[in-house]
Length: 343
Image (cartoon, rainbow, N blue to C red; front, side, top):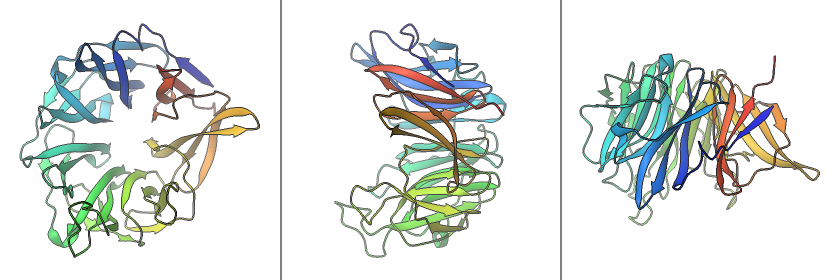
């Protein structure tokens, strides 16, 4: 069952809205985004306790001047957002499912670092930092048991030599980091990733890391972990303009390139399951198909709905009531809720 929400009192107004970061929040959802109005841009939040009834938080004082880069759900429905204010990396925490926010602190952040991704799982919270002072984007990692106290992770040269982390994921038993390794010979300034090949790392606690065995291929840029294995996506170097190339790992320690075609937008993870939406036609009818997987390789269709879309799949977030999709419909901001099938 699918429900559409586009109430102009909630998802409209005189400004231009961009809803960027939907996330599960307790029994419901939160969406963080930005509104541009009269030449100024500010952050707002859209909240729902059940995915159906929505309310809008138009003022978030702690985020004045902020540019957000991501959000993750912590235990007990708490939320952690990452981004920057006036060029400085920042984090924000919410103890009430996104209604109010407070500025957090992380010590020992290297100068020039921007926060790029945050994930949360049984082994704690992991944050990916990007060194904006180098075109090669050398990464840093920060670990926390609870999103409050943070540790800058040591990254030994023998493990991360020439490594470029592009994505992280929380697994049931730790964390993954996917990316690539640069060649020994320096790449030209015009293309700092030229010659980089796929690489991956794994950790059981977020603080001690080891290199994974990765089948040769182009640099990886996405990681999602399910209960039975993990999915990595990378560039497809066999055909220009081809869909992303998928890698699979049972335990994060060995990755194999798969002979599969990925035709969806970015997947999302909830409750140790990986979800994807894709649009297709059955005859003349437009169908949005929801698929789920425990490992990123073996998929099953979890639902279909005959609902035409404009503006593409958009971003998705699974949660307790179902899966929300945030995108545009005929030029307006719209949220769709696909409820989980009964049983």
